[in-house]
Image 1 (cartoon, rainbow, N blue to C red):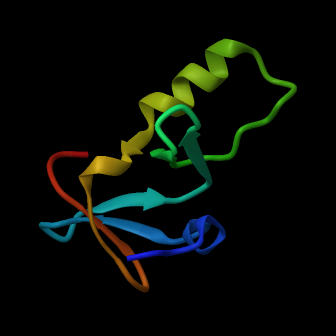
Image 2: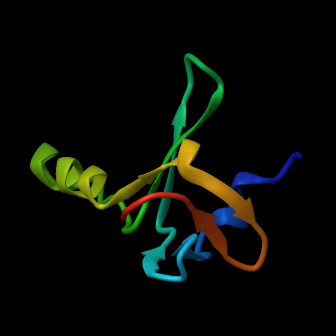
Length: 79
């Protein structure tokens, strides 16, 4: 299945048990492995320090947890 990265922005993320996780603010690409790495639940502000970016990664979903992408994104496991 092929989807465009831009179609992920703003999608609601739900757990496979129906729990609200968040909304996609940014998509992180693993350039070396040529794949999506994480879906961040907030926007990256380039003017912020590394600590802010680290906290964004704490509030993210690893893309390997994604089970379904449609009108919303369904992920497995605890959020």
